[in-house]
Amino acid sequence: MLLTSITRRVSMLAAFGLLPAALVTGEIKGPPEIEREGIDLIGELEDVARDIHYNADHLKSLTGSVQISKWTHYHHLEQIKSLVNEGLRPTLTRLTEIQSQLPAWHQDVIDQMLDSAKVLAGDTNSAILAKQDAGEVPPILNTEYKELITRIYEHSEALMKTADSAGAYAAAHLKAVEGGLDVPKR
Image (tube, rainbow, N blue to C red; front, side, top):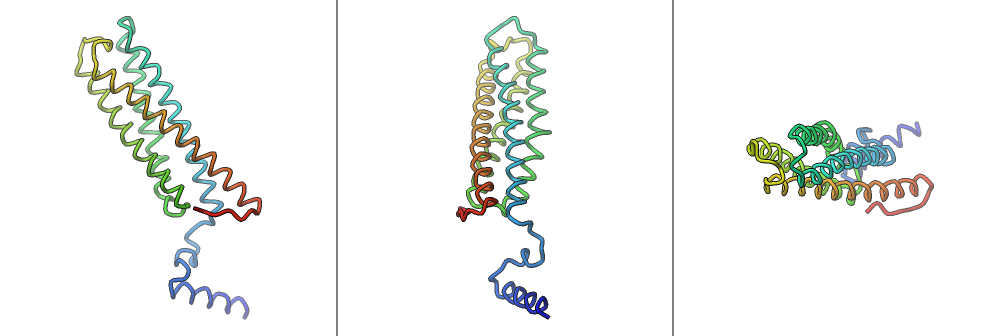
């Protein structure tokens, strides 16, 4: 009897728009689970950004030498391409799927990371094309290619730093909530 009364009250609150319908039907996970998943995904994104940054750093240093093989450049570019397609894309896809269930500050950070990742992917594609179009011209003489590699490096660094900061803040926030502190969601 008591359970039926509570269920009826919750249904009435939802009907009058005071509770989100998805919460009443149980479609939304509780904040700690979603936040934990978001933290894990941001950590994965940071790891991928760090790997891209590593490869871009190598490419950046290699563009100043004529003695580095074309294969070495293609290898690092392919590594970056793979990391973007197989690492960033699925992680960001899942983050955007749960984005609306996260606090507002988290949503803004996801938008920033998504924008950085899009630019990073575009620059990676452009660098691959610039390298192919250059033919036998060594990277040291290919200014477009060198500029694109520098931009990939900078975007991956920004993405890595944003993910690191967001992940640390989110983890601290979640720990405070789980510890019983009354912290604003912001």
